[in-house]
Image (cartoon, rainbow, N blue to C red):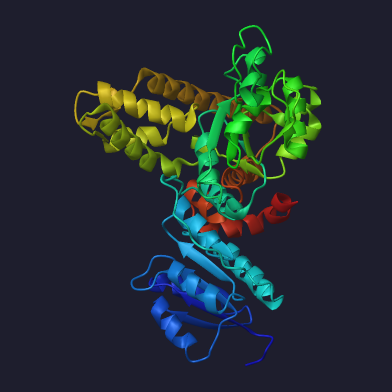
Length: 475
């Protein structure tokens, strides 16, 4: 074989996945081989034939993709492995990265993105940049739900950070689950056997927050009748989660920056500098850049925290997850409240899927708890849903009427000045707005955007080409 041609192995028990990938890669100057099981691939390895890149499913009959990854890491650690799975959960992502995978590819995937990823893995292999194996330790004792592309991006970052001590800033609207992500970062790190200490900086009065964070000595102020250990000392060796960091007072921002710089601080009223080994995980629903411009948040602290940033999508941008989350919350509520578990009717679930959820995941959880208690039957109908959901839907309907009225006014203005053939430019403009908005909503994932628009991926690709939108979107 020509040494310049890379050998790509595709391993999946789903023949349609093998066919799609082989078809997409056939013109890419690769030598391709596919296997319906990891066991067959291992048998081929024993003949002395080795791939340059492996693309394998995780869950298959017989040897799993993770077991194959572990074997390759032991015997052939220079081979990059891309793990595919339709089971888009955090455990899979963390296990993939911890096991030394080059990348994690959730199904369904955009075929162009898959080809690009395989090309990256090929370049990685040619550079002999060996991925070092790591031991796969116990998985976190909770499950994060996230089939939406935006949540898959979150899982990837968590997986990549499993080996890191770096500070992390989690950003997202209220109720999106920022603390859950913080706990996932902690539970998948080597600090998971040390303390995880959480504090909501916005919920504690300013005059008490300093003592809460750094502790105080006896007699430091009126009422300080004994020494107090602060949250930093409590978290020594582990992780400290600072929720709503954007609301932290300016003087405490300065003290926090000092701790991040040299790990040293003083208790309130103390004279001895203390040093701790703490990983900082901060979270905010604020626009920190705007607060920096307004002088309400230190720019140097912002840059110190924002080295690694995880953006949590609002629930309205991950509608694929609403049904699974709803079922999970109903099950949890039934156990915690010691009541019969209920389920949503098809109509009620459809209603929830189309609701905008301004309170995000927390609001859905609260709704499920309320319905567990208040819904009269085992099946939850639309008529059982809280009034807040019904009123919001009516407001959304009014908003729809508003844009239609605005469109009518636009058409009337153009007709008034004698214009004709209005659809020639209006329809393309309408499609352009729909396409760009859908792609921004899915963070550029074409397959997901096409599904939201009701098209096939090929239709969207053709539209992007015809409208010359590719350069605009990436420019």
